[in-house]
Structures are given as C-alpha cells and as structure tokens.
Amino acid sequence: MKNYSEALKLIQNNVSIIGAQELETQSANGVIAEDIFSSSAVPTFSNSAMDGYCLKSDLTKNASKENPVELPVKGTIFAGDKPPSDIKGSETYEIMTGSKMPDELDTVLPVEKGELIEKEGSTFLILNEPIKKDANVRKSGEDFQKDDLILSKGTLINDHHKIALIMNHKNTIQMFKNPTIGILTTGNELEETASSSIPNSNGPFLESAVQSMGLKCAKNLHSGDAIDLIIKKIQELKDIGANIILTSGGVSAGKADFIPAALIQMGAEIIFHKLWIRPGKPILMAKFPDGQIVFGLPGNPVSVAVGFRFLASQAIRVMQGREIEKPIYSINVKDYKKSEKFCLFGKAIASVNKNGQIQTEVMTGQESFKVKPFRDANCWAIIPEGIEIIHKGDQISIFPLSQDKNIDF
Image 1: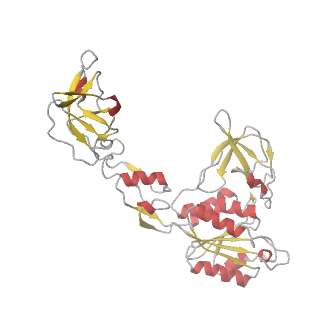
Image 2: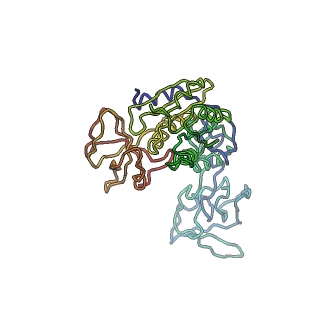
Image 3: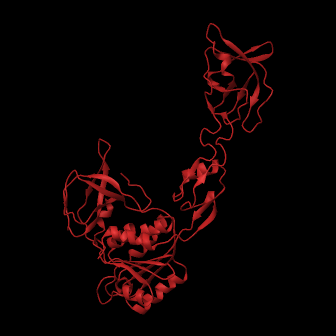
C-alpha cells in the first residue's frame, strides 16, 4: 500500500491540464493560464482623489494667517472633462473626484478646507498655510506601471482580481478549462426499494462539493451492486466527457465490491488501491487511456468526504493548472492518540487564542460513519503515519473543511 504523500505524487504524475480558452474577464471562473502584465500605467493619468481645488503648491510655500495667499478660481473641472491647458499665473480650479489634473497644477486642497471670497467680481481661494505637493492626487502609474505583473499563471481568479484586470483594460483573459465531474454512487442498500435502505448522502454531498469549487457536475448517477450495471454507468459518464469520475462504494474486498474489476474490464489502469489513511483506506485511483481519471471512494460518508477533500480535489487542482494545496499550521491543544500505521484525517475545531495564534483540537468521534461531529467541526487536522500521539503544544497541519474555503474561526 502507498502512503498519502506517495498518493499525491502519483496524482501529480498522472493528471494533466485539459487545455485553455479565452474568456471574458467579467464572467471568467477558474484558473488563469498565463502571466498577465499591465499594458499601460494605472491610473493612466493623474487625477484628483477628492473634491477640492487644484493648484500649484509652490504658490503656497509662504502662506500664513498673517500673510494669506489669494488664488483666482477660474472654473470647475468635472470627471471626464478635458482639463484646461492654458493656465496662467496663479489660477486655480475647482475639481471633482476622479477628474484629470491639469499638467501645470500639482496638488489638491479638499473642498471643506477651502475658503472663498468674492472680490471685484471674481472668486478667490484664500490659503493660510502651505499645501504639500501631490497632496490628494492619484499619480499616473501609482497603482500599476507598464509591464507590472497583474496576476500569475495558476492563480484561482476571484472577484477582487477582476477589479485589477478591468482597471488594466484586460477585457479577455486566457483561462485553463475547468474539468467536468461525473458522479456514480453504488450499493443496493441505497435503493429506495431495498428492505433495509440507507439514505444516499454521498451523491448530493459530492455534487455540492464539486459545485463549491465552481465546477459542473455532468451527471449524478446511481447503480446497484452488479458489475454490468456499474460498467454501463461509468461508460455513460465517460461518454458525456467527464474528465474526473467519482464513485462511492464497492472498492473494498467484499463480494459486492465491483469497482476495481469493472475499471480493469473497461481498460483502465489502477494507479493505486488502498492507502495507509483513515478514514478511507480502500480508496482507489484509476486512469483510462484517454486520460479520464476515476476516484473510487469508500462508501461511508466521512470516507467519501476525506477522499474527495484530500485526493480527488487535489487532482482537480492539478487538472486546473494549480499546485497541490498547502497546509495551515496550528498549535495542538489536547493530547490525541491514534494508530501509528495510518495517516489520520481528523475532524477538528480550530480557533484563535488571545495571542493571535491558531490552535486546534482534534475531536472525538472519528469513526467513518459518524457525521454528527461535522456540526461543530470547522477544519480537518492531518496527523501523519509514524506518529501515535500528538501532544499538547505540538504543531499540526490543518485544512479548511472544504476546498477553496476559509476556516470559519
């Protein structure tokens, strides 16, 4: 059997990016497929950061209450206006937020600090103190210079990234294609007609988990425990173009565990089957000759959650052009004992202590059928194989409950 680290390497070696496409920035969703650079300065021109009066700062260097400076106000510059270019002497202008600064003027006095007087039919701005050069001015290129890196290849785009892209006039961008996911739950016990039926939580959970990563679930199917039915359903998911197929149940060593045999019969290569992990030891990864990937997850709900969170979702990241996820480090707050042979993915509660440090408690109730702890858990804790006890104060690795989400402290 392989350990978890070996399984991650096998995922990286066997999963490929499925291509890129050009998308409109406003609707783009997924991972950026190229380094994106600014083609011009942002802001493209110097502009006023507030409503006020634009003027030459040098004219105010000797201003005081005893020696006020009077500057004639010649007009108003609104956002979108072409600024005046024939400014003479000490002329100043009222200016609105976002308006382009005249080349001859270099600072802005906030409107609430402006004192105006009328004299001889003209309006004058009175200044009783020096005004600093460039005050309240957004300088051209202050945010981005030409050829600055905006976003790196492999970045998962978010709403805030789009502000920078649009401000840099990037109306379309190259994005890696998002993989399509197919789901197949198996088991006679999940049939509604079964005399001892069990609710099928795995199908809805996996579909929701896929959608939370911004991906499409092509189909969510179910099959009873018969190899011909399982092959038929897997082929259906292959035919509709599912890049990754997630199955649940049927991967252990029982008489009704048909997933491995079905995949082999269909021509798939088994990449790994069974890992030194808990929960989820029987998990399987297979690959078809055309590159389609299958993760055979065990049937217990928590094993399904672990298999998707720490194996299938990592394969999705690789297929999207992203790196394998990195852990968050936390201080363990309570001794916890486990089997030394296995890597434990434990339901846990993380919080921030009074010193601002993240601290985590591994919960009781780690059995693969127990879902009640999810009511209180806000993260996963990983305790590697080779460790039997983690002690209070030890550093441990934690991950959010769901891929691409934050821990809700």
